[in-house]
Amino acid sequence: MSIRSTPPADLGSQAPAGPSLRFFTPHEARTVEAVMGRIMPDDDLGAGAVEAGTMSYADHTLAGVEQGNQTRYRAGVKLLDTACRARFGHAFADCSHLEQDAMVGDMAAGSMPPVTGAAEDPDWPVAFFELLREHTLEGMFSDPAHGGNRDLAGWKLLGYPGPQPGYSHEEQQLDAVVVRDRIFTAADYPREQAGEQP
Image (cartoon, rainbow, N blue to C red; front, side, top):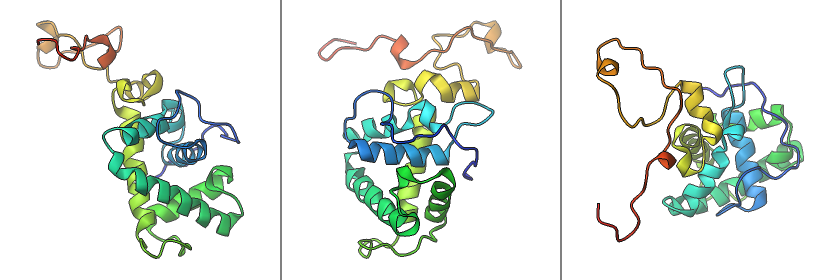
């Protein structure tokens, strides 16, 4: 996947919008949101990673099923900020979009100059970029129940109607055009409570 170049709304020094953080510190959240916003910015097709809340998805998953990636994220944010300060004089989240694009491009290409403190993991830029990219895509297109895809931004971009409760006989015919008047998410379906019989 290539990095799209259209800039998102300026993040400035504001904290990311959305629910309270579960894993990230406020600074880590700003940094991760800024990187994800450069990987998938807003464009004429619709909302990008920031508007879709992909940082919240990453925060939720790192506090839950992907706790094993917490150390990589914490180290990655610190190393990225160190590299940005050495190159541009600012932490990543405070750099301009052009500076951020340059850093993300170097991370993705594995061409980032050596960073103090990275001797034990010289491949951190590519590994961190790939993890961020993976979480950006997951947060953009997964069910909103997992913390991302805010306002169904990713599904609207794809034209995906969500998991539907059923399809009529006509809708199951070859070449049928299926048009739904609403998008369904996991929240539309009852969940069994612990201890309940299926």
